[in-house]
Length: 288
Image (cartoon, rainbow, N blue to C red; front, top):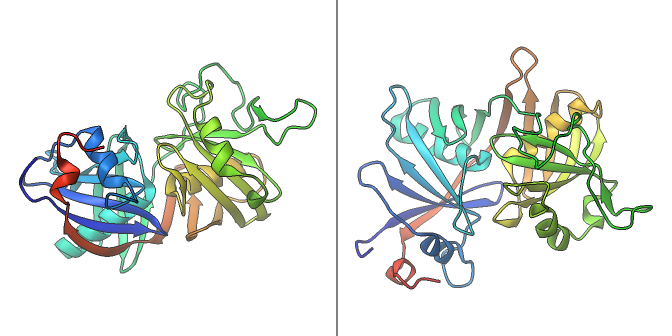
């Protein structure tokens, strides 16, 4: 690619994105290009790269294509959805935005710096998450780290929010080296599509503290779909109610697992940090 490629830098609770606009002209990037752009030392740096595309379906404002920092295309990203919805709402002067992803349609209500995104229904079937083998009860599957008689982590809840999540219930998320354990668990054979790994501490029936190792991105300040997955998993286990606050290193998200239709509503901030043009060296054929 030789033409200048403008970008926006955005974040939701510190979970940061490089956002490209391909609604008028297609953008083709290789996995090597994406890795080069996402590199925090030699590139621009981001957890995910987002491409906004025109959607031919009536009533859809934008199609959001999502790539993790490793260059793999993924299906869902809650924080990026809020960012893109906020951007489109300001651009079009509207309060409701329809965003389509590979995981489906997300309707978002924008109120200034805050966005409520309807993330749809969670999936709990082992084949929907997916898992490599059947489990009748996904509120806690057989998986542990450490000695059999004294595991460090064990019996995670597993959920799909359009992407796979495993939530380990702990007394203190900071007591575990998630930077070391995260990649081991993300790539465990039980997760054929890998998984996002969350360590969650229930503080009260209305509040949870969590840290997340995000699939293909590593430790992140926040993960919207992980917050949703943690909230519904906690409610399924009877640890909390269906409306609660998730504390993440980058801030808090409000989650409401709506009783009437089982849709998960996620409310949190979005921010535009700046803009620029991607350096041509990052788009070269030999980009790292």
